[in-house]
Image 1 (cartoon, one colour):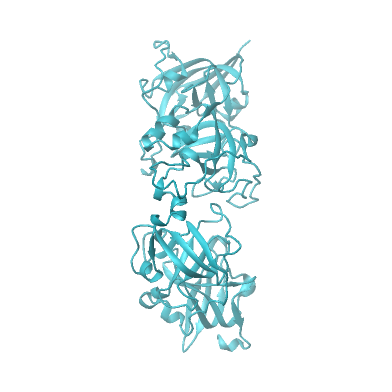
Image 2 (cartoon, one colour; image 1 turned 30 degrees about the vertical axis):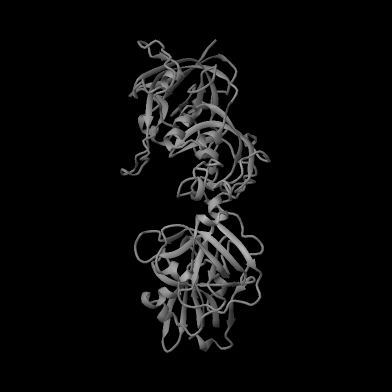
Length: 537
């Protein structure tokens, strides 16, 4: 006895579905009953079928059901024989209807139409301009999509796809064409390195369960259907607690269904489907592979455009000095040699360097390696005072394209030349009043300075990015801001008067003003409390 599930779906709901990849004209031209709309999934996935065409599928297998995370209710089906272009995403069914399905059910789908969706963005901005789109089934205009269970079948075995081979295709169009073959299909990609740690999806990060990381072939693994190994809820935060997956890991494989939304996605079907502990991943591109015109690790970059080559092949970068970099942004990668670490960021990912141990104007720069969610901790020997070589690309950072910029170099390659011998010496005698003026403050960007008679007036919180308010007493009292790159002032610090305090002068791109970054000394701010509060009042 068959079971009929009537699903009423409105077109307004279509906007929020998971989105899968675009079409290609090279699909199998399998003809069904055109008059009745009775077709195969391979025909749906072929560009010879126009978007909006009514579709009836008979005897397809339910392969994946989305029952995880904030957004649930989508499912995928495949032809029983599997293979290229054999799967499709069915979008928009009510939660209760999808819950009635079981993986392995044989179903007929009627009242559907083919859709090609490319996200257009909010008010026409921020959309996908790649030319790719997702093929999916949604209800016919003004109608209902009906799913009828006709029996129980066998889910086709995941197809093994060589992600490295796809990643080594010469052009993005060729890579797109390969991934498009597997849209909506269960696949396994094996021996893939991870290029970053899991990070939240979307700028709002409003779904702790939805995380992603990049792997070989331009593929993004996303936890839309199941958590990653070691994932724990973030307990109220908008960012997920890191999982067991780290940047540079070798995964034995990942099994999931291929989808598309700005990137080609592999949605792991279970936590165990992300197989850690692999041993046969391609090595990162490095010296000896930097002139072969091959993307050896399949990460989308080859030769000197690959960070592995940039970090290890001296011919991939040009020697430069910090003053030269601060004066004019280089057009290509540079190498800073024998510079000194002056401060470490509070998340132990990034740091600042100076040309010499004695700080001076135009002699400091920020070395950025990534946020806490997409980079690893600094090696233990990168400490204040260490002499290092740094290779990377110089950028001018600003979040809103107004005001000034903060100069930084990506820490692609970092080599410790010598352990600390003596401590860096900050610039003394400067005042906040002078440093707040762009003309006189700019030379001190990322330079270590010591300010005297500084009082903590206010502190921030996570909503204000922990920006604190300070004042300095000289002949007059000058108010200025403190940002938290190295140390965060807390409520207990309010009212404290420092006879001297050391940190970095910098440009706050969020406030578009120059500001102070107090340096951490052990577990406390690098400063000396005044014996007399009148020194700051």
